Image (cartoon, rainbow, N blue to C red; front, side, top):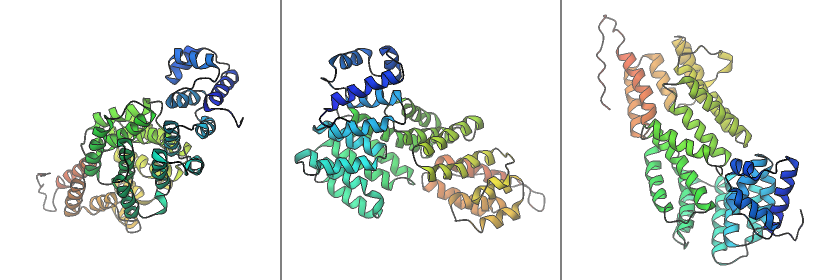
Length: 388
């Protein structure tokens, strides 16, 4: 890296190097792959480092040539940006791609700046420390900053930080927060920052549309937007595939499994191995168990092992497994099924509905109706009448 290069000169040198390395000089081909107009690429290359690309264009062009190594190029590019928009875009990029090393370097480089840059550095510095403190402490700090900052963009970024921290399991609240953020977004001018905020908001929309609104089509539409958007970071693409996999869960097993497997691989590639393993052990196996596949018991553990034992009608063994696992909403459902406890299933259904988990309430309702349709010891059958 040449130390006295401008960001434009560095980017020009690296893109020319990538074109030679990959033996691609067809600007129309690069345009199709990156989404950057061929005329823009021609002007940029013709200027030989005297003009810059927009941040999102720099991102998608370098990502087009190499979807992994582009991070190294973008790191150096971000550190060379020195104007307000460039610095903010660099901080947002580092956050989106979980580049904590880059975040730290950017904060250190610009921490003594004044005005709006100082405020943005404060925001991303707080965001980088969110895992180090209690949720309540973090939220209080975020809300204190919201009352101090001066721009709409800063307020949106801070509210996104709060939403990420507090709204994961409350889908009704997630829906309301996301709708408010989406309204605020319309006031922003088109930019990388706006598009970055948009993909985060659409990720929340996809989740809330599925679990709270029980609207598979809308959930899939928002998820597909994330997958097709060239600036979407991999972890949000993974989340989008997981949402699509869940949306197909009850009706299209193969589509469900395919998308969940893609999500697992993407979470693995972007460093979220623990979450990838959790999806592999729970979400993936839930689909197979729901469709009553016989799965190798050695590949299962925890509540989904109990679920598979229920599939095999080994109810006593399932209850024994459930005694050893942490209690969750789904472990309680499995306990109700295995013990044929209608009251327990009714209570769990009410919990799903009250927490806004309307989509998975469908599953509990189905299991409750099956149980209610089973003959009583005297041979009578209870008519399944549910009020939800």
